[in-house]
Structure formats: structure tokens, C-alpha cells
Image (cartoon, rainbow over all chains, first blue to last red; front, side, top):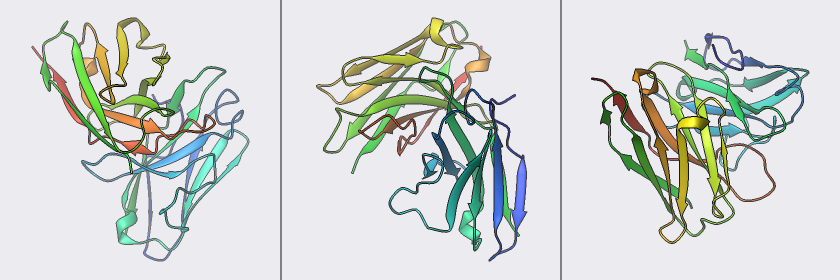
Length: 111
Length: 120
């Protein structure tokens, strides 16, 4: 069982928007604006898509956005494209030390 | 541009020690936090621990008793040793880095991953 809860799968058609949730606790997501999101294609290393809840690294499409409310963080992908089909993982700092915890991952299918 | 390249033994027997090394290519090594992360087949990611250029480490409490992370700044490399492995340690192991600055606890550089299988 993963530390952060994510839906196992989501799907959408090209051009649509989808949102992936990431639910933690008051010890991690709820206490820190240090949530990051990663995209992972099969057989590849994860790629940073969002950091500090809602910031995009240079080179990441503005179709990707993040938000947080209470103990739940969310990743929204707008204008879905075929290449967005991948697994997505959230990550948060937990507690006063440097422990990082991940979600179990969400498989995005572009129909 | 920072690039990470990792290597190590891919097949171990139970009770052996897992050993992986990650080399950093690019114009900077100091100031980063360098982590190890693993992913069991078909499962999610797990943070193992991290080290910086001074050798200061932070470990996942669930693995701390079996774990050693070290750094060689002269070679711009960092390493992972995990003792007494079992089948539960079978996973793809990634090295990763957090760019310098105030601590933001994300990973913006990744190695290619190494599959480590523990089997008798």
C-alpha cells in the first residue's frame, strides 16, 4: 500500500482535460507545498512535470498544471494528446525530516 | 545540462549486497542532493535515501539498517549499497538529483535505471 493514494487509472479523449488526484495526510501533502508530479513512459525513467504543487520546469508544456486543497493535490492535463499516455506519480515531503513518499501511480489512457 | 549514468550488478542471490554507482556528467556536482529511488516490477516508486557533496545523508527509515550511501566528489559519483537483500528488493533502481537551491524535495535529473533481480 502506497503512502499517497492515487486512482489506478484515468482516461480521456484527445483534446479533453483530465485530473489526477493524490491524497495524503496532514503529515505530508497537507503540511507542505512540496508536492511534485512525474510522468513515466514504459521502460523509461520518470520525468519531473510539476514541483512545489504548481510550478512547471522549463520545457514542460503549460497544458500541465497542479493544485492542492487540504490533504489532496491534483494534476490537471488539458488538451490531451496521444503522447500524454503514461503513468503519473505524485510525491511529497513527509514529516520534519527529509523523507519523501510517493503515490502508487495512475495510468493515463488517451482514447 | 546534467546527465546521470548508473551501473551495477543486475543479478544477486539472497543475503548478498546490492551495489550501484551513479556518475554525474555536466558542469556541476556540488550543491545538488543525490538520491536513490526504486520501483518493483509493475509497482510504484520508493525513495531510498540521499546524499550531498559533503557526504551528509538522509535515509528512508524502512531501509536505514541495511543501507549505505556514499559520495566521491573527485569522480563526481555517488553509490548505493544495500545489504542482506531478499526477493522483496527486486526492482529497477534509479539514481536522481535535485538541483541546487533551497530544499524543494523534487527530482529533476534521473539516471536510466538498473534492474536488480534477487533470486536463488
